[in-house]
Image 1 (cartoon, helix red, strand yellow):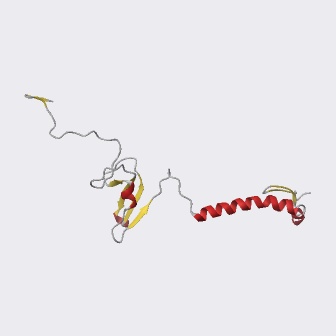
Image 2 (cartoon, one colour):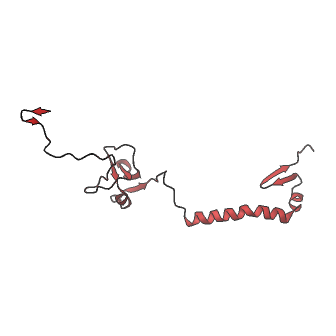
Image 3 (spheres, helix red, strand yellow):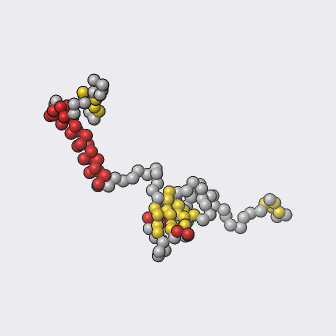
Amino acid sequence: MESRRGPLKSAVPSNVVSPVRRCSRTACGRPAVATLTYVYADSTAVLGPLATYAEPHCYDLCAEHSERLTAPRGWEVVRLLDGSAPAQPSGDDLEALANAVREAAKPQQRAAEAGDNARSADPMEVARRGHLRVLRSPDN
C-alpha cells in the first residue's frame, strides 16, 4: 500500500516466522518436542509426542519443560511414549533375553545327549528337527 507520503512501513519490525514450533512456556524459545493436552472431565493432563498441527487448546513444550511437568493436586499426568523413539530395555528385559538365548541352545544339546531315548518316550514321533516333530499317522 502507498500513502501520500510513500510506501507504508510497519511500526514494529517483523521477524521472520520460523517453521519450527517453539515451546509455549513464557520466555522459552527452545524447539517443541511434546504436546500437552488437558482432559478436564477426567482431571488428566496428557503429554504425548509433538502433534502434527498446532491446536488452540494444546500446549507445545520443549524437552526440559516436558520432563519437569507436574499437574495440579488431584490430577493425573499420562505420558504417552513416542512411537518413533526406541524404548530403553530394563534389566529384567535383558535378563529375560539372555535366558531365552540359553534355552534356545539347550534343545540341541539335549537332543544330542538323549539320542533315541526321546523318541522312545513318544511312540508316535518318527523324527525331530529342532522344535518340530514328525508324527506317525494313526492309520499306520
